[in-house]
Length: 469
Image (cartoon, rainbow, N blue to C red; front, side, top):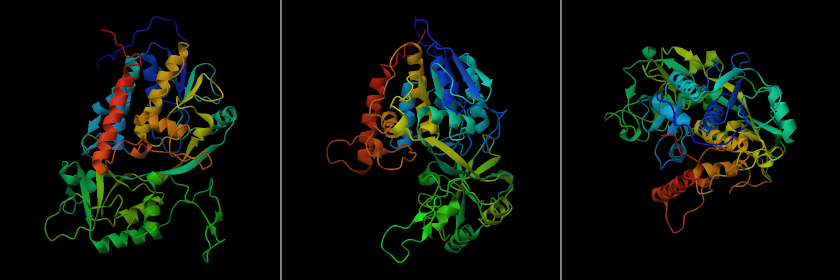
């Protein structure tokens, strides 16, 4: 692996402490180190594990192994394009760990972690295995993620003086490739974008049976923060108890989607659009399987994040054509995610309002998604390096996807009402400033992407990205 470019500075600096060696923490640490700032990267794993992590590796991908679309006309693709412009270290690692995945950036999990560790080693960043229970003094970035330990969460919210919020997230199961019935499964990506996915076709009766079984299957109960309220309106059910969904809407458990209506899955992760089949086949819905590793020995059930009990997962998912004898290498599971009330405690620079030398990064800020976490980590890392040198932190331009996303989670962006309950946010075109003129559809997104990338390129010139020869 080639040594990364090291940025040129000629002043003495303070060290920075980065807490959490997930995606955001590793990106922040690498941005600091490449700017000549000594970094102490602290990670509690493997000594203290979370309910979702499996290893003590840096940058472990807990949920999916997909970083979503790589097309600039897609919001996640645009976000990646911007991050590459800013010199994201983790996207470079992801590119080296890439495996076939159609238009998406899909990685081999273990190789990705290995690439990130190699980048940390090359930059001179040591990972300290220790559980911090207090917010460290001096320049620091808290990137402990949605699975922040209770002591650190209590210390952080006590310091910031604001509540922390929760939602439950779910993980999809992984099956062994050799256990699939390839006579019933066909290869192909949507819209003829290669053949990187395996597809299990469902007829309408098979689809209806799956939906019915999902709605009837036994699930693990939630205990942490169910809130009983009243159903609004003047209908006959007014005043009856209900439990609002505690899940992030962008990553609902498959059984929750099934309960919301018969066709929700058919228009969601099981949609057959863009997948051709031989004439005469009744293709009503499709369950897609995405490769988990470079060798193609493991496959993830796309969109099947779940909180079904393990025995129920085997029973229900083996009713999918092609999965009748599926061997489950990892069952789906559910875990609670923590995030801060960003609009009350964070600036768009990711600096804490109450402490000028403290920054927060990753999903703890209220961004949702792998690449969004990397983005928050990059911004926090750049600004931690600036603070270590006695400089003021930078706010990314509102015209960019990174800037608009972080303006949203800090309460400075469009579309967020201070009176409403803050919710996590993915990258999306609705965050960007509107373009002038009557431009619609794909042309509108293309123009917005071009404007954002142009602003990103101009801003990158101000980041001190002068590299050694």
